Length: 88
Image 1 (cartoon, rainbow, N blue to C red):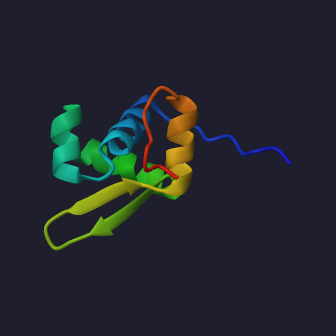
Image 2 (cartoon, one colour):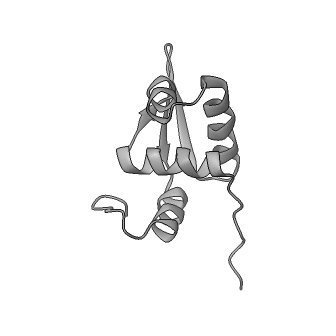
């Protein structure tokens, strides 16, 4: 059985990489760290969520985002040089 292909835009890839490196990020920090407008970050996070690559936890003040198991696997595949001591 073939694995399904996952198509990521450049922005989605950058967002996933940042989340994977930090372990967990809030939308405000993601926006600041990536130098992207919050709306674009939200759109990218939602795209990654629909693909099953991130998990979102909403609080009263912000959204916290972390890579799902599938997201960690994709990140490790795309960026094998990244260290994932707690990825699996």
